[in-house]
Length: 236
Image 1 (cartoon, rainbow, N blue to C red):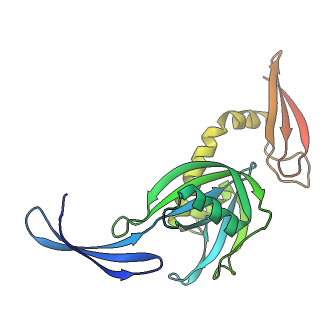
Image 2 (cartoon, rainbow, N blue to C red; image 1 turned 60 degrees about the vertical axis):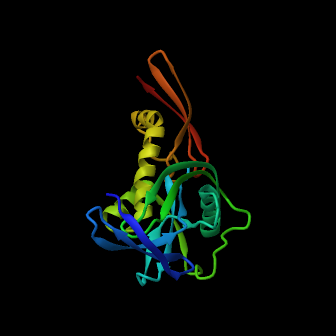
Image 3 (cartoon, one colour; image 1 turned 135 degrees about the horizontal axis):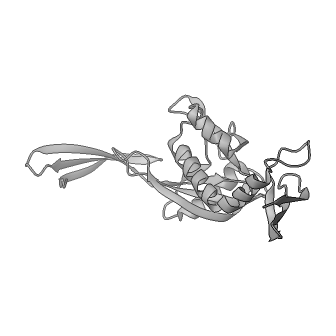
């Protein structure tokens, strides 16, 4: 449906968004009003370790009056590239850097009244930033925690994660990771490896290499958490 714009005025200019009121006309000729919150958009990071653990933050959201679980995210500066925003927010809020970035989606958060677009990135190749976290004023109470990605899905199901951008990022990120590691995971499940061989470590081993010979499959495994390496051999 095409509305004809008759008049536009900005009724509020804020630090986070502006409010625009448009006088419009339907194709029938009847007048109406559209109110739009103009937002510069933002970027979101889904930080994932090699063993499938995800970094979440817990921060207080003033409009809700409560602390909620979220992925690291932030508002775009004027003219800023979304990826650079995601890099900055990941380091500031979690104290980590990422060397591998994949755009998962660019979502419309509330298209009924706001033009905000959030760009969600999968962040891999994590390493600790030399300077650690750099929280902004007002973020002193923000905490950082790490969960297996499967647990974050259960947190969504239990309504413990209710933030829209985080739900989108986790669910799409899980699908992306599952597709990228299907062959490796198929072999791992076939080998029966679902945790580290060390009894004091609950890391999820990753396959370093494998070869097949005389109906036997041999896989070299490494635990990303404790760095233990071991070999598994099974009959095909």
